[in-house]
Length: 165
Image (cartoon, rainbow, N blue to C red; front, side):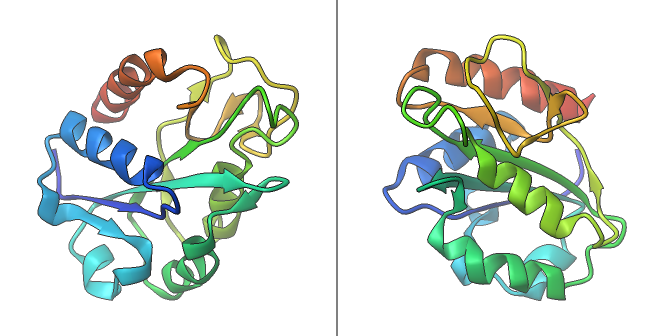
């Protein structure tokens, strides 16, 4: 597969750990895993696929590093890049905003010239509402490390296989 950059924002370390698992599934080395707060244009220029990871906070908000990070990304040339998004959320405590941050990042980058890959069926998820659901599918991979951590590795594997395919 082409050059891949895994870019994440993490407050408690959960999304960072999941980013490492996603990277392993793609066969990406630690050198290609980046915190969104530390990237620059060279990070995105060299990659053909950007895999973006976030968590959802509060009432469906971006993780703190992504507030500035999304503006950085919007300032870089993403034309022709493929973008896949994964996110961590809590479907039991926050069923009305489950993994909303995936949808926020997607919507913010919609006009950047990138092509989104890795949409996921809502089947097998229990939630009431999510900004990440568009046209009946999640625009990225939602993960619930609080209530469904036993499903994470299988979901990552299936997601990565769909993107590689």
